[in-house]
Length: 311
Image (tube, rainbow, N blue to C red; front, side, top):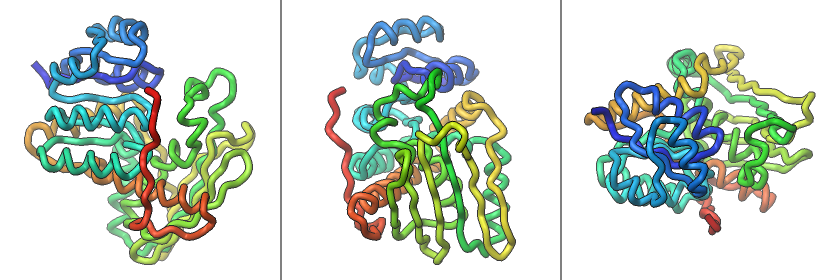
């Protein structure tokens, strides 16, 4: 019998990425599926050959680990409930919409010796990780430049109906992907300056601990002809373009499962664990505060908290 998993969430991502990978993994037993809509939970559980649960705490009680495919304002509370029950965590990015929940999650996981992985999709492709290892060993980087312009609100896009993406925009949805490949090379962010722009874009400058500077632009509502996904490093070695991942999302999630299993067997620690996920949230909170206040925000001073949700 493999590690017993519960899947929380019933949307497109839960079905096509997390659920597909969990159901196919040879070292996982997908015990059940829970969702905020019981009918959708029943449908997805049937599709995956698993069992629907009406009570999320009952599912948490029956498993060793949870995979969560829910909006970040919902994910945080459920992840805390699972961690307090002693369950390992495989979370989506961002782990929460504020530092209060992110800090609580880190404290719970570390105090209980639990495994944790946050799924930054491209960080689970070998070509991206090899690029980051090489770039880090080279050193001498002065900064990064990136444009992540998506256009998800066009007809037929599976993510366009997501209320949290409409509210929080590209900063919180694609921003984590950007930070997940920049932070390992440039190091921790100390301060952020951000501006809001046309089509719900956010433009930010990041100053990193060793003096490097990042310049980033993100949106989910770009003009269809203006889509772009490019991340470049520059410095003494010249210019380097960060590659896209060489795995599909479901294949990458299978690697994330592998890395959680390794930790669950006693080898705790992962480059994309909850502490790293928390540090990404801290940068996003600082950027949001900067755009709102019109001033530079030191990441250590960011105080954002998760909004109250209605379920």
